[in-house]
Length: 207
Image (cartoon, rainbow, N blue to C red; front, side, top):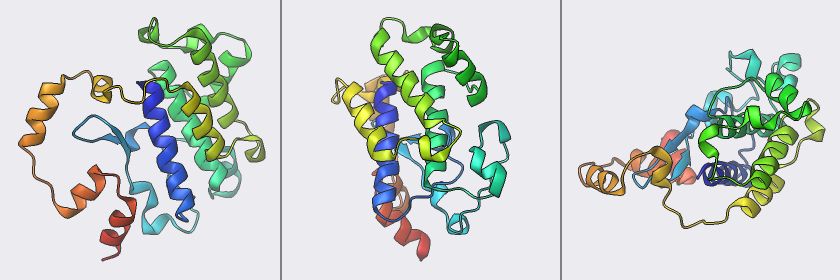
């Protein structure tokens, strides 16, 4: 399920890039929302108007892309770096600073990094591949990081059951999800968020 969440986010970021919105600012786990079916969706807050000039408003320096610390601006490769921190969150179940995680990876202490709750749910080979992908995303030099297309491809190869109900990722029952959905009515903006219709969201924000 965590692989699926990572894949959905990577696909959303790639979609933004294809639509001319390559700079997603201050990307972190709290930007990932879930719809009424428990499917992960990427919040559009990182695409706000006041972020279009390349400036970021992140204040947590431990998780900030290195190039931002140098120039005060983010680039498309910075988004990949931030996505790497989300992969770390999914793998470890914790918010581990990239520098510490990379030390564990270099020391081949991958078992220390991995969340024990994943035992029996993620194979050793898949876990290792996700760790390697996170490590590539977190490379210090922006040019050494993979692009989003490569990230999506890598995660898609690890996603073995795309039809699995992702509401289980939240630890809630499907009946509870359906019951809650029946009680909720959505505005036009909320519907756009829930369906991940980024074009509609942008139109609403412009008006």
